[in-house]
Image 1: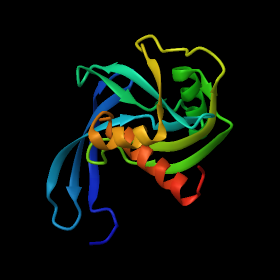
Image 2 (image 1 turned 180 degrees about the vertical axis):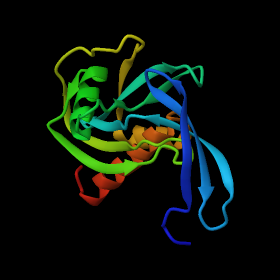
Image 3 (image 1 turned 90 degrees about the vertical axis):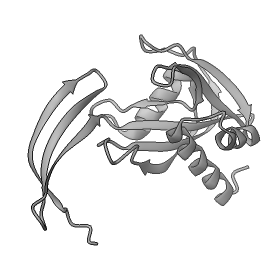
Length: 186
């Protein structure tokens, strides 16, 4: 199978616009045999998430209520990249806004696709080292977040045993641990 595009978009329509994402309907035709299908996409800005480690080598985690799961989730800081904003600047901004922490070193860990079957955006993963609290968090209107500190060994266990259930957070945590191990950071 080649990586060339197999489908030609025939038409696209926005079905729903929200403050966070748009839902689009796309009619497309497969090039090699002419099969036509209707597909739906969720289009939004790109995101960032951050595995943050403080000066005492503890992970800086957040806990917040998530409406889709109807539960409180333990996660890592993250959020939406503003239009025209570089991912690294968004990571620093989100870390500060959600936790009040600032890092002395920010390491890009690459990006992944949240769900390429329906999402059109990317999530950029970062590792923030030597974080220290410099202010109180500044939450968005609908956020109510608490900050939790945990030992790094517990962070990895939490990603494995289901205490941290957010798949995008788990992806970033694994990339961060791989980076720390390969570069003998601690």
